[in-house]
Image (tube, rainbow, N blue to C red):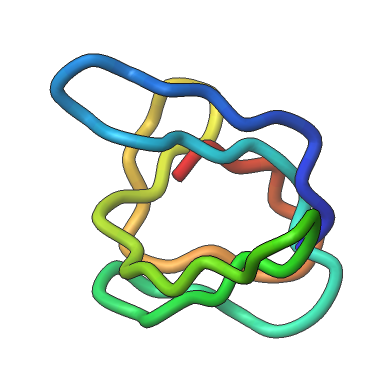
Amino acid sequence: MSIEGIFMATGRGTVLTGKIETGIIKIGDSLEVIGGRDNINTVCLGLEMFRKTLDIAEVGDMLEF
């Protein structure tokens, strides 16, 4: 996934936005954010596309999670 934006949301934590380029992502999947000085290990707590919640996202989807 290419990350377009990173936001800190009160009550939600870190929110990432971007487009999935390969594979799929599901709620509960463990993720590793690579870049900058450190890699961050985290878990996907929710997926949203155009203000609609999703259980699974695939190639080409523009997401917030």
